[in-house]
Length: 267
Image (cartoon, rainbow, N blue to C red):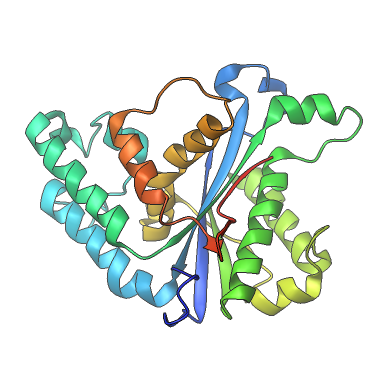
């Protein structure tokens, strides 16, 4: 959704679908492999999901993986990357090359807006020695602020859906969202939040439910997180070629307005 285009009709009802990379455990922050946590949200017009994204995603699955109606195929980045069932046909280099081009075309041609927030847990732990904001909730707060400002700027309303993390974690996340909805944040008051958010409840769904928006978020979250790390000299290893192509696509998808970029943030 290109909010910078004044001639484009803005969707009245949006949803941000959120996927995480990493974990919120501060005790693991000294491990370079677990130092960073990111939340990436993709903002979609709900009618667009129904009429375009979901059918197109299902058509791609049907073309390559022939799912049975009783058994959904759900895109998951790690399984696709490693050609795990039901994606074992991707072990064939020719099929892999063809599928990769089709997937990149979907990522480039579909209409969505990306917002990514990444936290350096090691720095967070070192800076706040007495009291520390839960890293996941901190990222969620900043992501919600950006989503609400986007909705207000584009005269839209919307709600929030995150991938399930398990019973207790889901309840903690829902409670955190509920508090933000009622109290606002340090930067956005509850009046604005309640004006643009259509529900005081965070929707939490397993990816196994075959939700197109959550699968899209999963596909772009890892490249987006690594791009932020590269830009801030927190990663030295170059991205693989396929991830580089996704990053190039995301350059046109991040939320921005009048030359200001709001779609990427390192905490």
